[in-house]
Image (tube, rainbow, N blue to C red; front, side, top):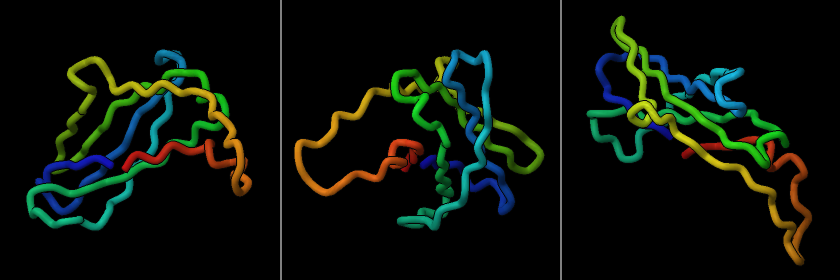
Length: 109
């Protein structure tokens, strides 16, 4: 999840991301999440990125865009972008069967 300053009632938060060093990119809208706890200063948004199996051995880079009151703000980790490195899941030795699509989404909370 991301938190943004509550500068106006209407706001749009999205995440621009890439899996190939910005040769291609996509954007995903973030959705408002009820405050927990309400601080009156910020609003919380969450996003899902449909990455699929291709993300298992790659690096995800992303930046957050915040549009409010006619202005646009970016959080790109001071120009370095946020980065997450994917890795193969190790199958559990024993236990209930895993959902085969459970690795298809990354959810930032």
